[in-house]
Amino acid sequence: MNYQQKSIDGMNPVELIVALYDGMVRFLYQAIGAIEARDAHARRIAIKRVLDILMHLQSRLRMDIGGRSAQALSEFYASILALCLEGSRLESADRLREAIACIRDVRDAWSVAAHDPEVLRVLHERDQRPAAASPSPFPQPQEARSSSWLA
Image (cartoon, rainbow, N blue to C red; front, side, top):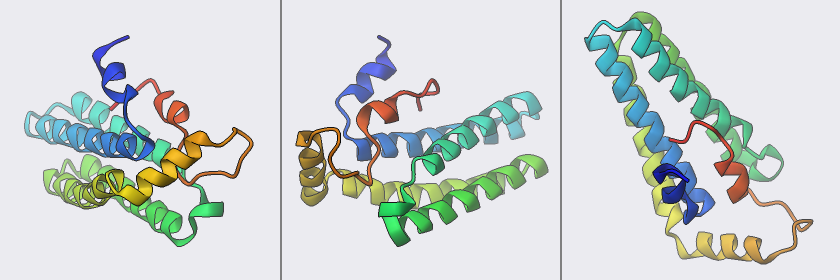
């Protein structure tokens, strides 16, 4: 087990989302560095990692139980994807910085939620239910950890 796996083992699903947002920010900074170094290959790799995270987050949205919040997140992910693609195509560090600012704003909200007593109560109740019980708007812990591109 590597250090990344150990660091996420104790996280609740909301903390895992925060970690994914942190990963997007880290990879966007790598892309900015690559733009400044005129390294197209490194820029593409960093942007691909951001897009992989965005697609993972998008695919885990539960529109059936998330309602307007899930729709808002879907639109947010689409706008960040567009900023990243445009920033990469134009080699625009400013566009990528704009994406970073947006991601940080939403990340901060997730971070607050990750420590909210009501959210923690809901997560605890979900963990106590049998597997066939009602669905949760949060990804299941094992499902969220199954990816090979840990942030």
